[in-house]
Length: 152
Image (cartoon, rainbow, N blue to C red; front, side):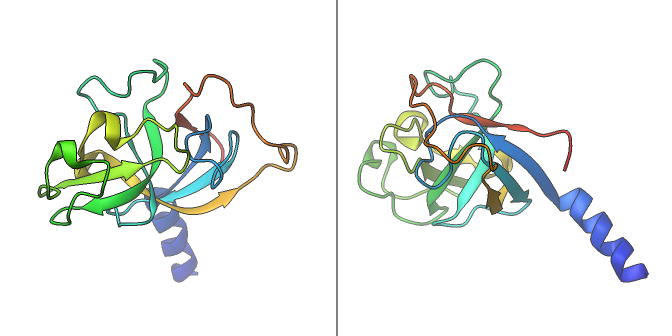
C-alpha cells in the first residue's frame, strides 16, 4: 500500500498533462495531441515544455500561450548548432537551445537561449485523440504552444 501511495504522490508532483496547440512540432505532435510531461532538466534531442521566453517572446505567439513545446538541440556547454550561430558559439551555463520539428516553427532562431529554470520538463508520452486522426489545419502557424488540461 505504501509504494502505491508514493507512486501517486510522485505522479501528482512530477507529471503534468497538456494539450498541443498548433503545428510547430509536426510531424511529431499534431494540434490537439495530449502530452504527458515529466519534470526534469532539458536533454539534447528530447522535446521539452518551457515558458514562453520573456524577452519579447516569439513574434506571433498568441497572448494566451504561456508554454511552448520544442526539441532541445543543445544544452549548456555544447556547441551552438548550425543556423543558430547568431547567439554565439557555445550554450552558456543554465541555458539551452530549441527548434521546432516543423521548419516554419518559431524557436531559438527567433528568441535565442532559453533559461533552464523556465523548463517545465520533457515529454514522456504523447497521445493522439481518436477524433483527430487527420492532419491538423495549417492555419497561420501562430498557435505555437500548449495549454494544461484540468483533468488527467
